[in-house]
Length: 190
Image 1 (spheres, one colour):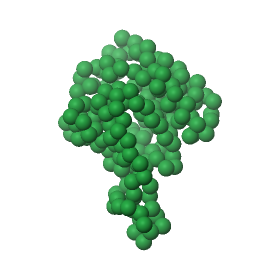
Image 2 (cartoon, one colour):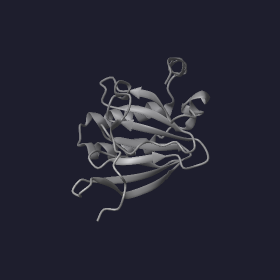
Image 3 (cartoon, rainbow, N blue to C red):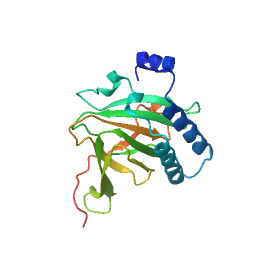
């Protein structure tokens, strides 16, 4: 989020849904449960408090024609989690990647297409193979935790997609939740 947008949002105050989401995630993270359980519990909070797209300013919702855009909406004082909005124009996508922490995603506008991969390192040539996939429409929430979190996300629709991501890390310091990008070939595993 730009400093101007952050200042305007702070002046207007956070949305009720964002405040309730932050409060719920704060309580979950304070329980210090294993990452898989934390991800599932945070998903429950995001389902209950999924913000509307108007959480973002009209300028933020327009996206960037060169790449998907990230807006950091909240970072816990202790850096234990971040709430981030991603804005995707049609056709924009991530590289195949995994994550530095657990992550929970809720789609608030449009839909995202996701492919999930496994790395086959036992074969003669290490490669990725698709193990699952999903179409995540508006209102859907999903979560995951490392290891086993290799995926690729894209906006396969004709309209802008906006999603809210809750990461178990301080994204304002890290800049991204991506731990590793995978350039391995993708093919079936025999």
